[in-house]
Length: 478
Image (cartoon, rainbow, N blue to C red):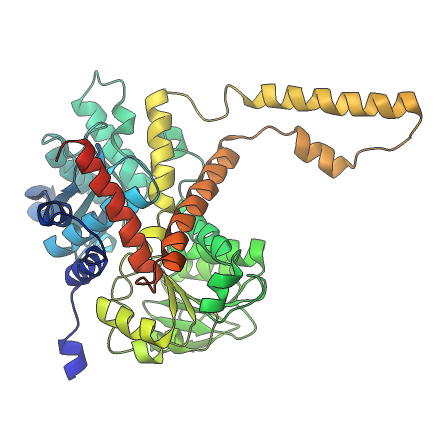
């Protein structure tokens, strides 16, 4: 191990260092600063499940960072690397993330130390239900106190099991479905939740590219069209971000990095084909139409316009930060750039769109799902047809005027079709997410451009978020 690697801060230390950098620029009373920084509580649970004829013991965590607003919100990850420090750092990040995008939650996070690939579906269900039981009986899963969501290693299926387990334990709770978000549509989920984090990354980049001043800081010009993108991790978040940027904004994905190596093609990769290959074969090895390298991390160092780390924390660190050439990095994962690497990249002039903002699409749409569950009605159900009827009145009147006056013009069918269609749940969710990502970015941009002591978006994001948390505590009389 070289000397620079020894100085590498852990994920938890990175979050603390970045927090400290921001509060040094603020005028907070020391007691309030400490109250915001520390984790309120962490619950460790060890439980047994009988599998394959013998008892297996599992260790899980649920950490609550801040209860300035309730319920608290945050994902549950299933990974063999899960440990208390990581869960507490992620819970802190959730507090700031929710504050930044104005989702009315405190921050929480959960984790189960398990490699989900080692178990079949039935075994995973038994393990998940038992974990949910242990948390729910302590109100660490509860619609008005603590609302989990999917994270690394979990998805709709696990959320449906958790929701059902909670409902079994609370048979008269009319809001039982709101105990967890990220559920399948037929189990109280919301349209657009699976794509939400990746979609949020797309909206974040669109907002960045709307401002010539921001682009100039990264040495970029033009629009997203034709920009060369490298994606590290083609899971749910990386896949959707890459897919939307290519299909809707004209970006070109030239590199995809996975756990078994990386693919590189300067002409562009077919994201859908790569995703299907990974799903079918468990990795990128053997994929045609691209150069494959077993040492995936070197592809992160290739020339590109935008680098999207969308998997694990700490992939850009002291050992490789100097060699990263991308002028713009957007953190689709939590904590992919360590505090040490962040210093190096900032000195190089690299612009980083920080994780607490960039991947907030997930918690934003989770908020919409929670509201939907509490209101017991899908978005658009009441107003959609009424909207269409009002638009139809306008079209009918325009066509009548055209006929009566003999002007003879007609509306193009495409316009007519688009104008007449009332918004369904998916369109409303995307609209709400776009609005959220724009407003949150603008609040960061204002601090970034107008505060002489702030030279990066991450510090700006922390300043905005910590300011909002501090205001909530003050309103509580603390």
